[in-house]
Length: 67
Image 1 (cartoon, helix red, strand yellow):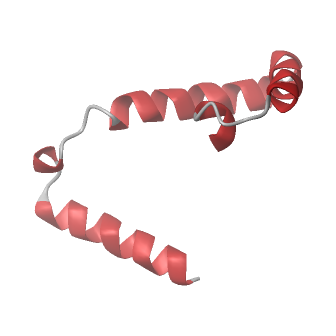
Image 2 (spheres, helix red, strand yellow; image 1 turned 45 degrees about the horizontal axis):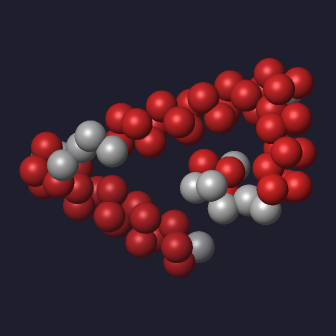
């Protein structure tokens, strides 16, 4: 999914992915959710996030990487 969204799939894999997405409701819904998340998150600035929320997010990602 990430490689597809970042246009990093080889042409053959991209074609297979798009074929699957066209027939799989669950995956096409997930793709739409990911695209929407990227769209919304791209509009956020660091200043628009409360300092405590920023710290909580950074802590969660640090802890996730350790796991």
